[in-house]
Amino acid sequence: MKVTFLGTGASHGIPVIGCNCEICQSNNLRDKRLRSSIFIETDNNNNLVIDVGPDFRQQMLREKIIKIDAVLLTHNHKDHTAGLDDLRAFNYLMKKQVRIYAELEVLNTIKREYAYAFVDDKYPGAPDMDLHPIENEIFAIDNDTIIPVRGFHGKLPVLGFRTGDFAYITDVKIIPEREKSKLAGLDVLVISALRVKTHIAHMGLNEVLDIIKELKPRRAYLTHISHMQYSYNELTNILPENVYSAYDGLKIDI
Image (cartoon, rainbow, N blue to C red; front, side, top):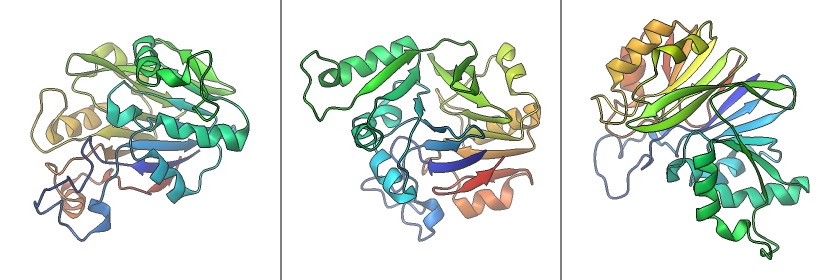
């Protein structure tokens, strides 16, 4: 399995519009972060994308991706769904619909916000999405088994996803105890680390590191990082030896 970090930034990205803070003005390219998304090339030759934010087109062009077998959505916030219209390029390239897997409430949001893609007489150039409702139960995409992991983004239920020994968890404040067993024995855990201090809907850095220590993955990568987190170089200097700050374009093998 191969994983590419398409974007590792929080909802504003880095740099933030109009911000003159040290991180937004950093010359380190690893401090330049598009909105969070990840690309998985599975052992079964499936290309999976988790979350499709407003930078999706730019990410696809940068990585020269021409095939997507399915999109998984963690929740319905715009920084995770605003790029869905650009799936129409893949409809053209692959001559078929793109499958979308998400909870029913997320799919209902998509139907409202992209209503033009679901009307009977839709415009020929509209994106063609094949919506698959999922719950917090194991499901399959072709020969790949996907294990959803329930988390809470403040009060909002969200899903992380595990496939094989890899798991991706973003925008979480709480992972219920009953869900943590799904994250045992991981090779790689990717988890959001919005900022240094705690937040009403996100864990602070120390809370994230405590969860990583509890779950004991072989490696962990931090994503969904804002300009209120440490810089890439600062994180690299302070993180435990098996924990890394992800950055846009990073590729890892699992």
